[in-house]
Amino acid sequence: MSNRHERRRAAALARGRTGYLHRVRAALGAGAKPGVHVAAIEHDHTCAIYCGHGCNCVPDISISDPHDGVTVVDEHGNTTKVRKQ
Image 1: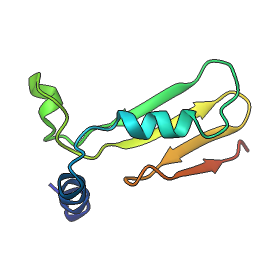
Image 2: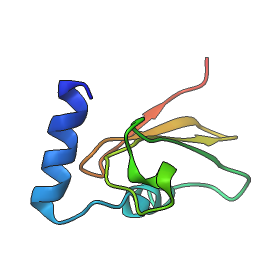
Image 3: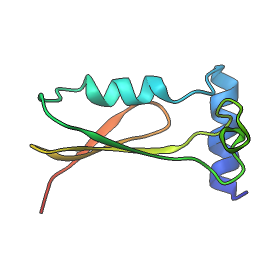
Image 4: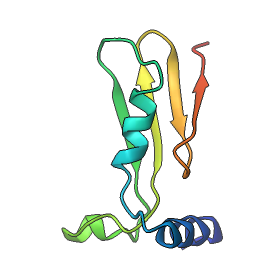
């Protein structure tokens, strides 16, 4: 596992949050317009989700919006919009 993933996992465990759905809700609640949104959730290759258990990593999350481009959610739940080109 890379150092970045180790740091992100340690930060999530320190906060007592090992899930990621609160980050998806934060992105959708950040002024999302009605329509179809696609969430890309990229788990670490060592995540327990691949063994049928709960997520134990801090996955990379991005949500596409058909109107405004892509919203990227960091490990703290902060959102950043990336406009379509």
